[in-house]
Image (cartoon, rainbow, N blue to C red):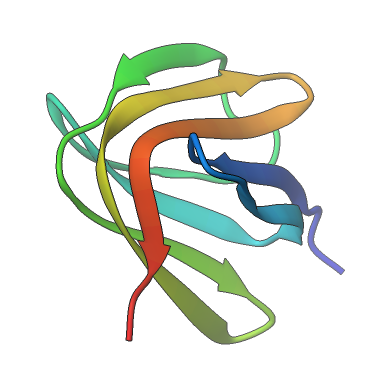
Length: 87
């Protein structure tokens, strides 16, 4: 079984997601990027777009506007200025 990534998505209103996932694709200010377990640490600003959470063959999509993504040895945290689950 592949290693999982701990991912947390937080907006000013509430935490929208927290758990173990296979991959997260996000709209970085300098280009879209994907994060898997054991990714090299980095921090980047986010632009408006869709954040995609891949887990067990399913994809959950969130619409986000701005914020930051922080990849650490513990996982990925996204602090979004605004985030809602896409319809």
